[in-house]
Image 1: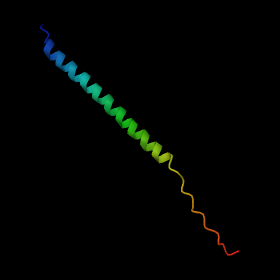
Image 2: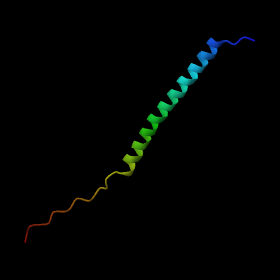
Image 3: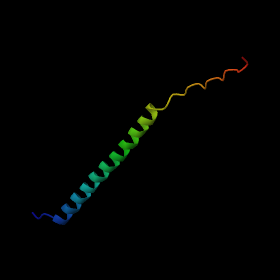
Image 4: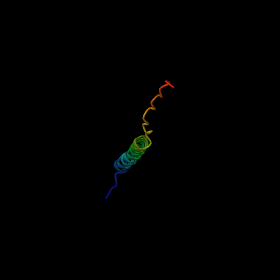
Length: 57
C-alpha cells in the first residue's frame, strides 16, 4: 500500500486554509454584531425641546 503524500499535503493545506478563513470571517461578523448591539442599546434618548417662556412680564 502506497501513500500519496502529495494528495495528503494538498488536502491538509486546503483544510488549514478553510479553518483560517472561517475564523477570520467569524471574528469580523462578531465585531459587526457587537457594534450593532452597542448602537441599538446606547442611543441617546430624545428629550423634548424646552419651550421658551414668554418675556411678557
